Every structure is written in structure tokens, then in C-alpha cells.
Length: 282
Image 1 (cartoon, rainbow, N blue to C red):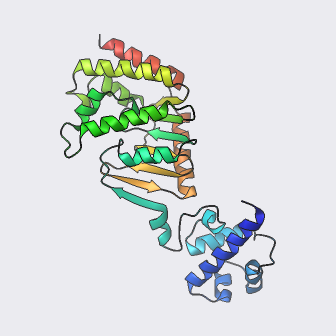
Image 2: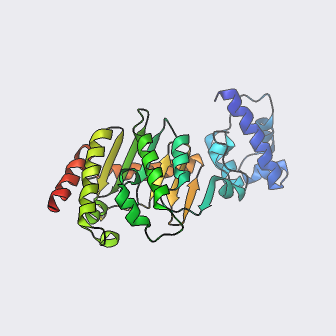
């Protein structure tokens, strides 16, 4: 976006902000800590400069909008309370992290780096037997549909332009391997096959797919997927909380980056951890 376009967007949105406030220009200028003449200059078509950063921040804070929206850097977010409704959406009826919407969002983010915190182990690496075990008591969800989705996402991950980072607690992987928690009724033979399959797929997909492991005693994260700069989705069990505003995505991306910095197992080491856990089951 060029300087002229940024200036035009700013003026247009500033006018909308003032109209929405219900204040006179003089009263609005006073509210944001400037004067009427300065405000008039900002609204003038012949203006060639943006205001100082602190003035932009004051306007955004007063109007309850993001600086990115005010400058036209994002189309998400409206004035006042509407910014929350537009920039953050609740998607109901989420059956799992293998929900069809996630596959669609993956496709939309093709070419961007995707960051992913799974609830247990990465869905695209799960075997058919593990998926059937997970969905055996969850009607009306059909395991077959989830298997197809997992296969589609795996095929997507094999595309050369894919760039996927996974980060999760090492304890989740250990619990699966040892049949603890939700996995206590999963037969050992199925767990062995799953670990073998994951080790093979990590070998095949690296470095397109990079799986980091952190210590769950030191860090925590809800299940999360960040689709490049487009959107981020938190998985809440039966719904997704979807963020589209730039500032929200940046905060969640920083959270993911912090998880990676804290990782005790790097991607080139994850396969060895899996094989070690697999050996314990012999």
C-alpha cells in the first residue's frame, strides 16, 4: 500500500470515526488531545502527512478501533463495539480439530506458514485406527469423514509450498505412547503402529513439517492454529474462536513463537523421541 492510499484510507476512516462519535469536530479534537485546526488539516484532501503516532493511537483508543484498521491496513473491524463482532467470531458445531472448516482455512492459507498446537498429537499424523478410537462414541460424527479429512490434510502437507510448524507438550506424546488418560483403552498394538507411522511421516515431511516439543510443566497452550496473516483459530471443544484482526494474530503468533523458544526438543530430534517411546512398548 502506497503513502497516498494510506492517507486516503486514514481520512475516510477518521471521518467515519467522528460521525460515529456523535461529537462536534471541536469536541472530538479535545477528546483526543489535539485542536480543531489540526483536525481540519488531517481531514483536508490536500494533506500530505499522517499525524504523529501518539495522535493516531489516541484516535484509535477513543474510537475503540485498531490502529491497523484506522490506517487501512486491515479490513477487519468496525467502529465501537462492532470491532469485536467482526474481528473475533465464534464458529459453533466444531466436532474436532479435524473439522472441515480447518481444511478450508488451510487451503486459503496456501503459501503462508501455518502454526499449529494440537490437543494431543497432530491430526494429520494420526492413523485410521486412532481416529476410529477417538470418534467411536461421538455421534453423529462419522469416523470415515474424519479419516478422509486427515488424509486430505496429509496430502496437503506433502505439497512443496507447505510450511507447517507444530508445537506441543512432550507429555502429551508420552501419555499417548504409554496409554495414559484418554488413551488408556487404546490397544498397545494400535499405539505401536501409530508411533511407527508418525516416525516415518516425520522423516518424509521434514523440513516441510517441523514438530517442536516443550515441557508442559513450564508452558501451556490451548489447541490453536494460526493461518499465516489471515486468521487464527482457538479450539474450545465444540466451537472455534476465530480471530481475523492483525493485532490479534500478532499476539497469538508471539505466543506460538514463545512456545518454540521454550522447546526442549527440536524438530530434527522429535523422531528420535518417538522411536524411544516406541522401544519402551516392545
